[in-house]
Length: 401
View: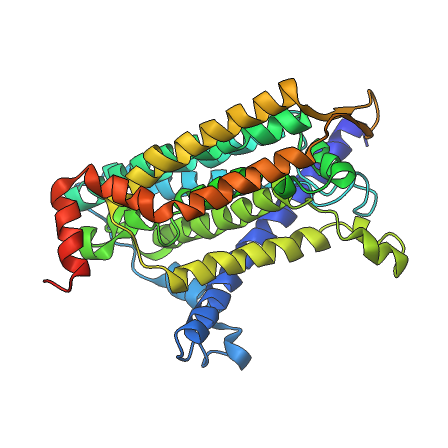
């Protein structure tokens, strides 16, 4: 068999495994989320279908597949059908660029579907394409409520993509590469990027909630305002595809946070003294770290109420984007005039220049603490920009109607 054909078949096999794993993960994340929300809210979650409700996702899948698929008379049939496919396709493609281990560690193969030098930029581009599926779904439905939901979602996702992308510029300047493997090995030698880019991580973390349409930023599906947002005219398997895209995007966002700020697929080095090489095991450590962030997504949904749309837009444009720009300028100034680390050509080795990076980590932490300390004052400034809304807020706090 020619080498190129063997490589193509292996890539196809890995892609199939990733797709099956993500779709299975989506199915059982619906169960996990409902069980956890039930525990958070002191009520029973799913408990009837199968032992420990383990067959509940299968029941949901059967219901979605065989449920009547409503045909909307005024819809653009082609775009109406393609929109959810676009969303779930780009969600699946984006995850394939996340490395799950060192090279040749998965039965002699690489534990990723594709590895590009511009991997981070490609992944951001793939996740950004999901907005087309949502907007086109709202537009093609032929109804005003889905159209409003699609416009709202497009504005939200585009706004927070800016702060998300800007928050990563400091990471790229520190590492000097957009390749995910380079970012992981940089952290293995110098420490997790969370230690040096705490402010950037918090900005990315908040933006990830808005990008995945998760509470408290689930405005595109604000039922009390827009019936069900861009999903109003969707049912059966088309509706399920949108749900798949949302959960897979949540997996991708969690994997990105792990890879960019928490050491990626590498496990704790201390465990190597107990089991040699355990920190290099593929897939396991990535999944463990991802599970923590997926739990946070669910925890936040159970704890924080949905914010108003004007608050969402002000948070993105007046706070997160300026902070991301400030963080970028802070990192650039520090690397230019204070210190950093420099990579040895051809090796994953680094040597300190100037004062190193720990002062930068301290500065980032101080900026984050200052942001938290001034949070109430920032909300007051936002209310002053809208006198009527500020007056209403004062009345509400005083106990008025």
